[in-house]
Image (cartoon, rainbow, N blue to C red; front, side, top):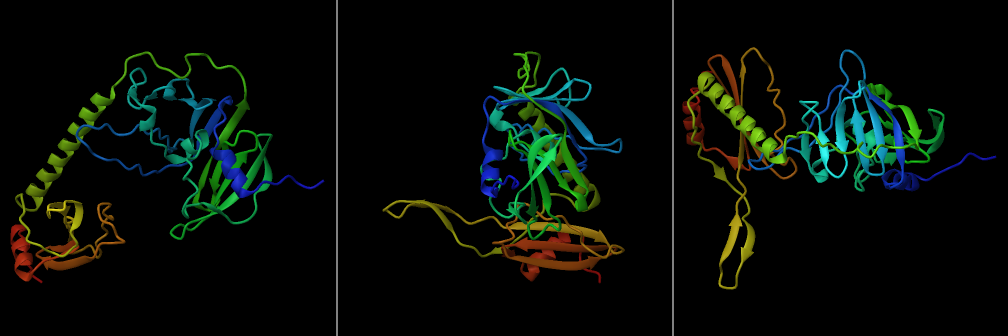
Length: 337
């Protein structure tokens, strides 16, 4: 008898498609220890609810799971709630008795734990980020259940492939692993069916509202910006700094009328500043997410001043010699070498 087979296209569809009557109880575990979570700052908008659980020096992170259709509950091993997704969403990040509450649409899914307990979005397998199998999908077994296993090729900027083990009945991701990168996440218990108490996916206790989180988040951001400004003034130079730039770009027309009226904009140039002691050989700067590397043109100015090495980079703009000298004077960083 030949082995059962499934195409990659059919397996993707199985993973993405919600099963409204599906009930799953179990436990998930991950040894993922680091994860970057992007965050936007806005005065009137709370950050998205982002359930992230990471391993630490004590071992893998573990959560108990209940799934019913599109509803989800994650509890810590001791039974205290961590995340509830029902008609609303509740994240017990700071206080186990007073979670953050928000709309379901404001949940951000990142990390291996959420890969195991939620279905991928319809655009998950677009592009090149672990979207193309290195070979055919193979039948497998996981926790005694029929499953499908597939190895996905890495994108050009990542070195190792990623392996998915998918439950043949439910389409849920049972295991995600990358042995050479040291990543292993999966279900350690998985049971389909059973009853679910009516109050499993709701919370009736006190909450921190979206508006309260937005206000606290903005206040935290403002305080952080003040700390950064104060550090600069104590350690570098007085603020503000005046900079004259020669910027060349195309005016983007947003709106116009037959009488010649129009509204448009010329993209604002971005300037980055870095300072290092002379004893440090390189500028190990972090890439600035505000700069589109595919479309911007950058110019870098480097010099030494006293015990410091300086680097200023302008994007889609240039500094005249006089403008650079004026900037160096304001930074108390006239060239000395």
